[in-house]
Image (tube, one colour):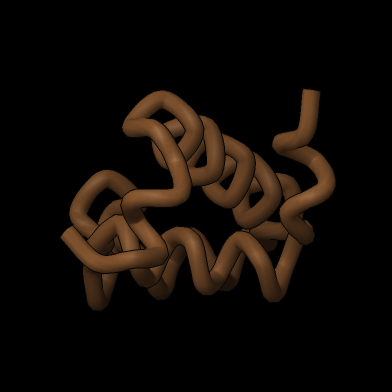
Length: 67
């Protein structure tokens, strides 16, 4: 576990995964689905926690997690 992953609970990281997946899903076009069916993809559940945290910070921002 890295310093970054220690800052967040497993539930918070899973929430980040869910929001990233939903965000990506909303932007998909038919050509994107065709490419996924052709090439496959790494699901959000298979991406390491630290990468999720980094990507979430870049795309969404951490203020969303604040209570």
